[in-house]
Image (cartoon, rainbow, N blue to C red; front, side):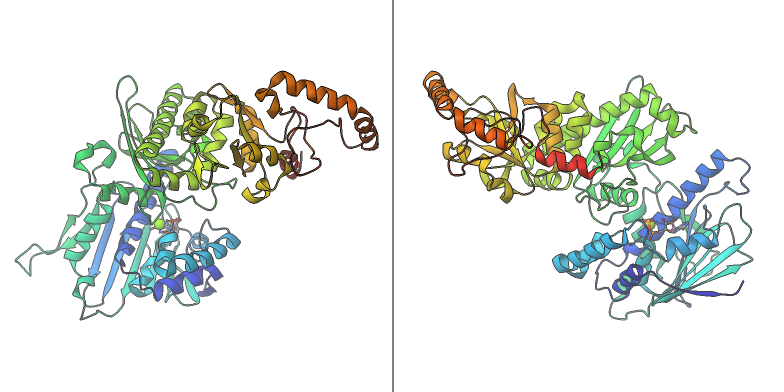
Length: 563
Ligand code: ADP
Ligand code: MG
């Protein structure tokens, strides 16, 4: 097969251009990205071999190797992991994985406006392409474990890349960066220096569970034989005590696991002892990924058994509404070849899920008390997902309600918790009022709001489709009913002066009986009943639904879902 020259996908090309012309100061992270990919490839091979013993692959010495060649100015990162087939190389390296094209373009534009280039690079897990920050040409040679034919990929990061089959390729992948010319002004960025490489690996990849080796000359003796040195300590961070590990180290682990370039918002440690021992290191990201609400969002944390990686995206360990949480769970007593199906039904896993869920929610609660700004970021990014839990997880409903906050007429921009709402409730107010709608503004303009505004009664303004669902299901908070202004009869006067107001209304209803009856007849096809209301002050009339009916927005939602 001849060499193929192929074009990068449009978005990939844009990202590459960004890398090549990058002014991003922290260029050394390219090495972290290559090591991270190599580590993933080793994990995958180990697992595949575990599942399929007949796979023709050597797993006796899985490791990562870094090679520098001063004269040629190249740096190579090699692994003997799973490798890629010819098709996979084209698919995985020529495109930006996991990015809905339209969504990606949109974010690219928005991010560029908002954050400039540096912020932009920070927004995407650009992984492999980051090599182009320091190299003007990249070559990748790979052979998938079990296959005989290898593949060479090369690119100068411009519009195209080449692909060709190669006969002699070792199992796994090697990525060679042809480094840009040295900058005599800036020796600090000399990536051919073993000293520099050692420092970068220590800083970003120390926890990687596979050995990262580099051949170095023993100090003081120029002619000494080069011997491999293992650069990383390979210590599992989750198994070490809190005071042994720096925040930076935790953050680097997060970046490796989450394929995120940014620091996490919060790090959560949990060490469970007793009958079922496990350790967990979980992270709350600082940003919601754009595909959080898509069907194929990869959810869950990594599962290890006694330091051995078992699977990514282990969804059995956390409920769906915590699907954005990243991290590692290391269990002591599980079989190495547990399947997802078994995990779903395992009693111990169920216990772990409950512990982890409570721990995450209590962490958010602490954050709310101690660091309101950070909590606000969390809620802005993940509040919508968390609210799904109000419907699906009755056991933790109160814990979720405790960390939830909502827009309210109390303040133009600051959301309120239910607790503060209740503290502000007027004398004689028994219920918590809310109104759902598309936006704060459309709710504000609703005739339903008039009487509440006039009387200074606070109303929660819920603008998310999920709000109607949970508000309905939850029903009450702290013994107070959650009541939609758009549903059923709300008698604001009954409280002030029950008997007189009630009598007055009775009288009025009799007085207007003729009109009401006539209106009902005229509108028979569309409505059930016409009645006088105390809830309006300016608008002449409004439509409300029966207490048990769907509200209009919910009807829309179900209709949109095709039901
Ligand atoms: P990410 O790691 O976030 O998926 P990258 O750009 O770093 O994104 O890598 C893209 C894909 O290329 C990886 O998901 C993986 O499938 C493949 N890949 C990259 N490096 C290697 C490697 N050393 N061995 C096997 N596959 C690799
Ligand atoms: Mg990667």
